[in-house]
Length: 241
Image (cartoon, rainbow, N blue to C red; front, side, top):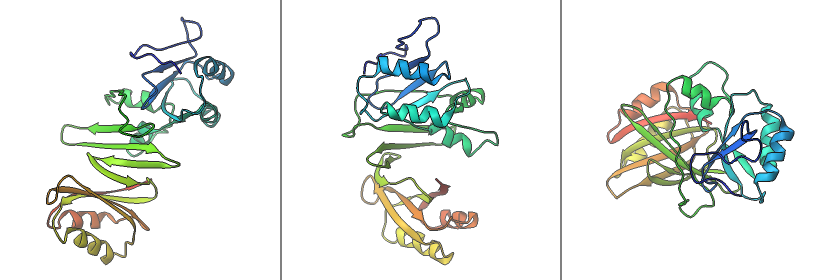
């Protein structure tokens, strides 16, 4: 596959109005900008652009035109492209309006969310790797993921982990000292919240560490507050995937 190194699109149809344009190197992820919802036209351009259907390359779909999303995703999968929904996942949690993989980029921009895309040849030993960093005036958060037979989160805030993003999950930042993990587990047990899978990561012994749990049941809001109030627990949050 040949993709431009710059942010200029590579198009194989009319230069005035290409049906589709790729942005960025297809090594970590790329953005696919669609200017038509004609699947036949999109398929023809994919055929003229891609020479290997086994790349399993993550792509972000960008389109202001209404799309038949299930059919479009099936078409992209057939060409070895894996649509990802980073912005959809973020916006779903804060908006009441309908958000999908296609319209999420435009909806984010209209709400003043600045989106910066970067590309690198270094996938840290993986065939492909997607890194997302969210930053506000008060805090920042990053996560990196890949696809090895199934989706995997491999890094959170620079801590290496191995987590399947699924179900009721819990993330805590804490000081890596004896007893802190036990305190968190005991507090969850008080409210009958059972831990199915646990992953921890740290930078150095005795420093800051991160815990990611997959739970059988969601954590009640009041328990999150009680967990944050524990000694050596800096932050805690829950999520549903």
